Length: 221
Image (cartoon, rainbow, N blue to C red):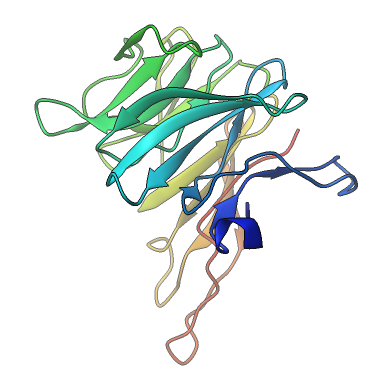
């Protein structure tokens, strides 16, 4: 994500090689802000959303990274931070009729929009291991990790987690929290799911009412 002059310095989506070379802009919208993008399982497309200032709503989109072909999927009154699952569905949080956050899914052609049966009302922020072996999500302020078919759900010991990411093989979990330490901003922790050990990867003490913003977590392949 980077602000670009063609978009009035609002965020656009870029891609690059793993070594940081061949940086290329892939979204070219005007006067709208793009959210962070998520890769399709075949790495040929990205999904992201736009905040449409004039319409006061969000728009879920996909883009082909080779042809730059852009596609509208759906509109929403709620913020959309999409995740592309290994089963080739796009998932995101919305508020249900019960006024609870709920995880919904839609196919990339936009034809099948429904609540995702893997999750309960109130669950949010799904994140998959890139090999598809595990999925993590938030439930009642805690992190839950389970198999992609919903079995072997495990509650992870954490306080105040707001972001999570699984390692490529699903063996480790990273998350951000400001409630694990006293007088601290958002810190990054890594949990070994087999050994049940926890490592504080990034400490973030508040000094003179200032802190480093380290709340966004992702895990590279």
